[in-house]
Amino acid sequence: MLIKKKQGLLQPYYLLEIISGLWITLRKMLFDKKVTIQFPEERRVYSDRYRGMHYIKAVNGVENCTACMLCPTVCPAECIHIEAGERSDKEKYPIKFEIDVLRCCFCGMCEEACPKDAIKLSSIYEMSQADRTVFDKGFLLDQRGNK
Amino acid sequence: MPSCTIDGIKVEFRDGDNLVEAAKRAGISVPVFCYHPGLSVVAQCRMCAVDVEKMPKIQTACSTKAVEGMVVSTKTDRVKQARESVMEFLLVNHPLDCPICDKSGECDLQDHSYDHGSAYQRSTEERRTYVDLDMGPVIKKNMNRCIHCTRCIRFGDEVANIREMVAIHRGNNVDITTVDGKALETDYAGNYADICPTGSLTLKDFRFNKRVWYLKKTPTVCEGCSRGCNMEIHEERNQIYRCLPRENMEINRYWLCDEGRFNYKYIHHPDRVLSPQVQEGNSWAKKDWFETMASWKSGFRSKDAVFLVGTDLTQEELQLILHFAKSEMGGVPVFHFGTPNLPAANGDGDSDGLLKRKSKTSNLHGAEKLGIAPFQTLPAGKTQVVVFRGGRAELPRLDRSLKVTGFGVFLQEEIGQFSAVFPGASFAEKTGTVVNFQGKEQTLVRAILPVGESKLLSEALMLWKNQSLASGAA
Ligand code: SF4
Ligand code: SF4
Ligand code: SF4
Ligand code: FES
Image (cartoon, rainbow over all chains, first blue to last red):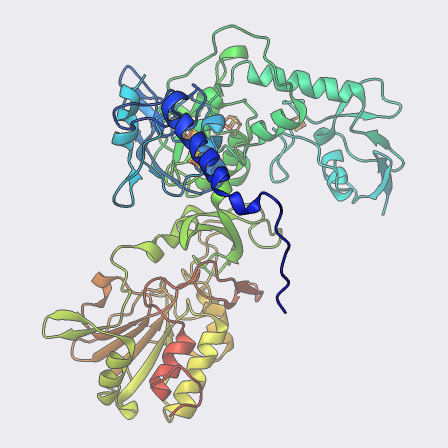
């Protein structure tokens, strides 16, 4: 059985409420400060501590990383793959350094574990890609112009 | 048994046990560097300091014999202080190398520093450095990391019977090196890397391949010779990275020879036959198991055939082949092969007075126990030979006119005269029993899954008999 609710006194005149609601929209649109930005042209500034895309730090063109494997060991997403090798100017260096960024959860543990200050998370946050991307060593070294 | 008290725990010990061993029985580990149970005691690192009641000074546990009624404490303040000082002293010259050091993760220096050392360093002086000479194909040297425990020197002297490591110069300038800077000569060089408590001596073969904490360890037995040394296979993701000795006082004590240590290499050899193959004309065709088996079987006549079994197979496999030859094939003769010029177990003997035996396969004594005769010449009228082999037994020379088929582990270059090969499992890929020269039965334990399309012998024979892997199927 349908229970008919009794209407309140002002309820039949709901048009008033609609008008006041529309006024809020209009006011925000015309007079308040905007919260969205025109993305590729305009960019937000993030805190320095923001954890975005990784990069490998290099000093005088030599990567800091010594392939100690502490970052793949600590990484909870198991997305870092390193192969170690030897060359004349560096006893141990990564021949291969790959990060499967789609699996990364940007926890920053790799940065924390690194004894050589080599792997860092930058504040770059635009990472959308059309295919599954594995960032290799060359790419990671190029990031941020290696600051 | 006499007993003493260590940290309030009453422990029984054997006469002659030192305090390190006695403490081990009580489940207390005393940190040591220079002491190794398989070597003489020199008491020179001073890390193993303990307090003994009624003795005025702290004692080195490795050189103090346990005595009835002794009361020992390993946790007093002055013991802790002594250990911390020893650690600090050793680390004055030790580089902060752990990120690139292969020992990291299983390093005594690292562990003891963590447990007993201080997290701070007071010295600011430049560290002592060395230039390292090459030590041959097995060992990579890095003397900057050395703590001069002299274990390596004593190993060569007392175990490997060759004086090749020496300490030259004195005091702070001590340099551990080979005599005249020559390469190592012993066949037991891998043990240098095992006993070195730091990363000064590491395996070249394992260099930078894997961090040790990733490796999974399987206790098994070496198949290199009829001694059957106990060893551990270290593996990750079905790939073997190294083999280390496992203590067994009755067989190999703490050691392993290089031949056995690196014997696993053939398992991941790029030329290993990993799928069934048939020789067609002069080339090899890779086919699937069912197809190959069906076509090969149609050309097989059991009355013309002989089975040759390698003495690197396990007892279970040999028994299976004997049974198969008798009941399924109507009495095909079975012979064993393995080490050339060593047909019978009574010819087996020590080959270097240390570990290595003359028989270069693990199960010659087991094959003989099962009553299998050695292969000398082919019985008259036989034209087909089926070779079963684990991977190490040396293939006998066979006449070119014979039709030869192989079951087991082969490298491509070994199968030139074969007409078909069915890939099998090596010693690391199966579980089974082998009998060593003392008659001891030991178990091989599967460490990795068979690589490629290799199948266990039981599966291959099942397929041979039934054309199916389900038992009883027609
Ligand atoms: S940020 Fe976290 S999840 Fe991403 S690579 Fe580093 S450790 Fe792995
Ligand atoms: S933790 Fe640092 S030094 Fe070690 S492998 Fe990762 S990036 Fe390289
Ligand atoms: S090389 Fe290793 S075993 Fe030899 S003295 Fe140095 S630390 Fe000890
Ligand atoms: S272990 Fe006792 S002094 Fe070195």
